[in-house]
Structure formats: structure tokens, C-alpha cells
Image (cartoon, rainbow, N blue to C red; front, side):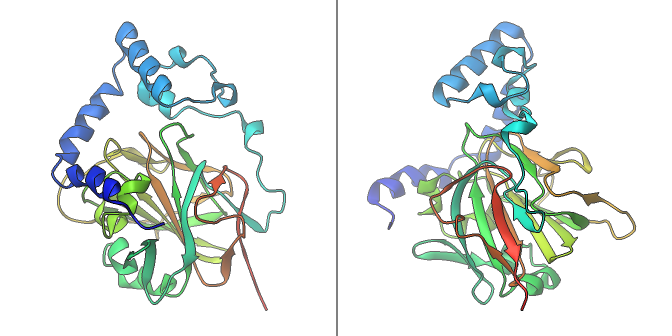
Length: 288
């Protein structure tokens, strides 16, 4: 549906808010260990964002050392079984489908009236852009109440990672519908994998309160330190992650964008507005 006047009004403050300062403060609050204050923060958070603790390995929310540990809690494996057909790509997160479409001549659809450049999303990397120029994409939004670890859709070998500094606009529905090129303007981490089904990119997009993105192969938290793109090459290393294996996490919620070649088609269930769960069918490779 087209954006409304109310949505534009709600989005307007995000142009002037000190995104990184607010996110730095949230980063600190989310790591407070003083038990009375930590428990109060978790209580307020769960009242605002109801969480299904029955699925968590640790079901007591106050047993976590701080809010961020609670937020990045592990789930019981039985709660998210992987698609039994191992030729299928699996959904890497719990969340909602923002969009899932074909990339049209290097343009990615964001919302009605808005698209953005694939090349810009990839930090100007023309080699990567060519792999996906006529490929497919799925944009998956993680709400504050969702599970926030990110898993592999398919077995892949990491070849390159780009850390791209940027803004930290909210990625809620009202901002996606009103702020042009939002995902290509926000801070993000671009992870390029080679798979048996061809190239794949997972773009982990930061947002306000989410200026910390972590991957399993990168020690510490990836944070903005300069206004330049940082490139990490893994050509001389072998970092292979299996289908369904954890590859990273958001310290508070955001968005994952999956890029595939044109041979890999997203499942019919992956449609804008649909709720998705980790492990369900995401896509499959079609061959003639």
C-alpha cells in the first residue's frame, strides 16, 4: 500500500536524530550487569515486546547476564527444524518478508515508489554487482521480539566481507515506505559466499539501536570507525559454514537481504508481508 501522511510524519525525525549517539547509548544500556537495573530493563523490554520464552534454551529472562544476552538468546534446536530437502535453501532468520523479487537491471525494489541501486548496496563493488545484476533478492525484517541470530540458507564458503559505514535509520515498515534508498544508506555488512548453487550474498543491515553486527568469523563487534569501506578478503582461508549453521547476529534487531543468482528462485511462500521462521523453505536452484 502507498505510504500515508502519518508514516511520513513518523519518519521525519529520523533525518535529524543523532543515530550513532542513540545507538551508542543503547549499546551501553544493553550491557548493564547490575542485577536490579538489568532485570528492570529486561522486564520493560518484554512488556513492550512479548517474547515466546518457551522456545529459548534458557527460559528464565532474568537468568541472562544483560539485555543483549537475552536479546541474542539461543533457541532449542527442535523449535526450528531445517527443511528436510537438503537441495532447498532455508530461511536464515525469524521475521517478516519485506520484499522478495527479481533484481531488475541492477535495481532492487524497496517499497511502492522506491527502488535502490544494487551497486550502492554492495558498496560500489562492481564485481559482486555483476553476479547479481539480474538475480533475485529477499529482504527479511527482524522485529524486536524475534530471535536475532542469523543462520546460513545454504552451505557456503566465505570469500569476502565488506563493512560499509552509513546512517542508522529505523527499518520499521513506516520508514521503509517513506525513506528513499534506506537499505543502501544504512550501515551494513556485506558477506559474499560461494555455494554449490552459485554466488550468494547476505547483507546484514544495521538500524537505530543496532550499530553492532557480529559474525562468527570476525572477533568482536563490527562498528563504524570511519567513513570508509573496509574490505576483508578470505581467499587464502577456508571458512565454510554449513546449511543452517549460525553465521552472525544482530545486537538488537534489523534486516537481512539475501542475494542469489537468477538460477535460484525463491519459494512461493516468500512473499511480501508473510511471516517466516528459521529453517523453512526459502529457495531452490532450478536447472533445465
